[in-house]
Amino acid sequence: MALAYHFLHYAEIMGKPGSGMRAMSDPLIIAGPMQQPLRGIPFASVFYPLRERLFGGRYGWLLMGWMLIALGILGTFAAPPGSMEGFIYTTVPVWIQLRGYLEIVPQALLLSAFLCYWVNNPGKKWFTWVLSIIFCLTMALPVLGLLTRGMQR
Image (cartoon, rainbow, N blue to C red; front, side):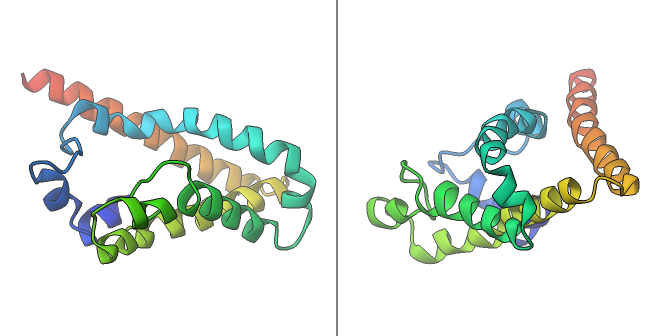
């Protein structure tokens, strides 16, 4: 997200009037990473019944990545930019919609690759430690940002 924010110029896009996006300084945006575990609940409810296919095979991560891309990005029931319906129903230029793929497709593939590696290699405790540290930092940094923001007022 941070790389996409910088290289895809999100501050400029989100700062335009009528963008429909909250400013990066909005407390809900700052707290966004802390809400991601809630997003994991529906993911887990889909992946769990398919666990033998996704975690048992050599290319399960690729199937999981494709599921995320096909259902969560391209075929979503809404019409957000970058979805099949977004290309039809929105006035957002196609090149801007495609630019978002530079962020969301790697996210889907990395999530599926890391999750499959983690589940398929339970003996690799170092990986569990690395993921746990990253998770704790991801949860703690927004809290610190919100606390310091509150102290400055």
